[in-house]
Image (cartoon, rainbow, N blue to C red; front, side, top):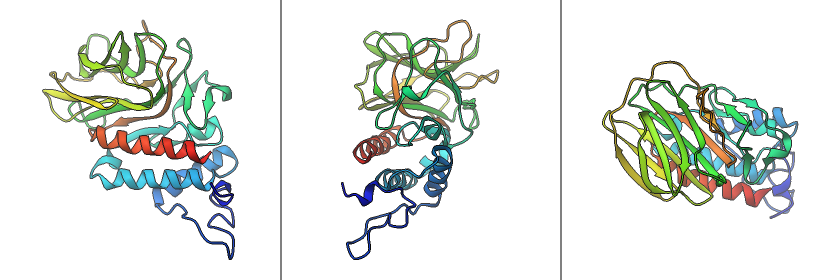
Length: 274
């Protein structure tokens, strides 16, 4: 990688040195807004290589109809220079940090939980689209060390659940329904895990490269519990996770396979740029 690609994206010579050639710079308006907010949190702009990767990610999301607009709460948990920068939201309100410290953050691979006390409150209930128009996802770079640990979730006592976890050899996902066991194997590292519902009778579950449609009748999402990341929001049994995550998103129904492809390219490009 050239030295110019290591310059802050807003440096005077970020586009290349005079007489030596040029290199691409971010151009998408939403990406530039996000990068400026990350810079304010970090105290310096990210490298050109990181900024261009983020720019390409935003453009790829927008290339699939409805994908970008369906994301209502999200963070890219890698790439930024600091933990504070990583918690700047791509969309929605910034999450509330509970017990994560700078040492938990890796610019290439994301943020790691400890399985006992650390989680993000997304400050989103994930109900903006209604019970039949919803999704959640995480991009996991290091899998949790034991079963029963939740990647992301919320649970309303006596009502529906929206959560994703690892359980034995299978991944478990439910979206606006009671417990729905998955037949998909636990994904490998560096893959998307999540669910999307656009029907009252079924939802789509993605676990790495595998996809299944789960028959399930949606239930009303009573209460207003926020989604937690690295845990599920359920007071009697939080079930924290020690996974390492590089991305999460919550919002309306979307194409999980397209999202997973875009995030995978983003994380790979950031890893090469830092």
